[in-house]
Length: 203
Image 1: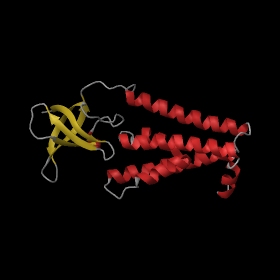
Image 2 (image 1 turned 180 degrees about the vertical axis):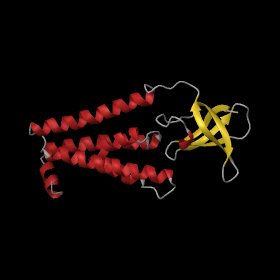
Image 3 (image 1 turned 30 degrees about the vertical axis):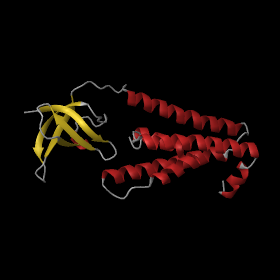
């Protein structure tokens, strides 16, 4: 017999949470792998239908979990993902065009692409570490990568990997890094120091 309830707590970084059943009683543990439709990320207060089984530790856990409230791919998260990818594409396109007009050295575009790729990979490693209870990458290290130019890759990782996209304090620091990077780039161009920096890092 299937039970019904709502997700009362959800840790998206680690991929698990708890369900409050309609009949009351203790919350039921649920893992992301137990959902039928894994292309939809669970959220707090989502309605779900599920079966209950006892895990190896004897505790109840939900299996064969399905959402009971319609959630199309045009939900707010999907819209945010589209906007984020559009912002990244626009930013990198602008840098590429400005390089073609000799406002930036051409190498600066490839620097942002490389920094973004590295940052995306670091996010993916940290996401995997969070899911498997391994040592995490310090947030300051992630912010440093964002500040030096990897913020486009970080934004893509936040939306596609669903990592660091909810924590408010992290998002504040992320956008401060974005603004800081843009201001730093503008200052380097204005003062003529950009070529010196690129030469120092062999670009």
